[in-house]
Amino acid sequence: MTLKAIALNCSLKTSSDEASSTDRMIDLLRKALAEHDVDFVETIRLVDHDVKPGVTSDEGEDDAWPVIREKILDADILIMGTPVWMGQMSSVAKRALERMDAFLDETDDQGRMPSYGKVAVAAIVGNEDGAHAISADLFQALNDTGWTIPAVAATYWVGEAMGSTDFKDLDDVPKMVAKTVKMVAGNAAHLAGLLKKANYPGT
Image (cartoon, rainbow, N blue to C red; front, side):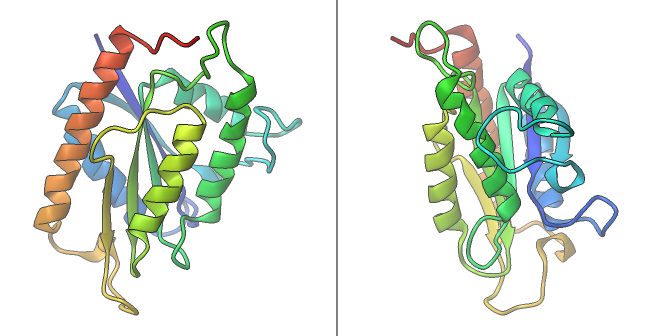
């Protein structure tokens, strides 16, 4: 049984800009998931795509979300990567969650949303406190839209308040970040494997 993971990088920086700290955190999870034989499909940097505002799965001409939606639902594990921005998740992350709201009306005959049986985890980075608040809001929204959240589902790094050091610029990954990455990956792979064998029964 092969498990697949995909990441949404909700950085405000486009791919043509410098590498983001969010990319670095996602890459740590990618490597840790590989240790559990999880195939990492790709990282989709949402700002590179024209994801229209809205709460349906297709907002019309030139909307990039339908293709992205298909890719994330084809995977077993979703990594939501976001920077801490003004103490909150990025606006890009919020847009992705808003588009997933459509899942509530896309249930099967057993009342299961298309995200049922799939696992979501978070990768959060920033230079100010906010990781706990973001994971709380993010996990509530993901749970509302059918994703399953494993135990220890977020890995994060926040720098010194009003500091100037970015996660991507650290020479070494802090010990506790590395430890948490391994725990997030292991728990996500374990839970995704169980759900792939036996999905929720629904109603």
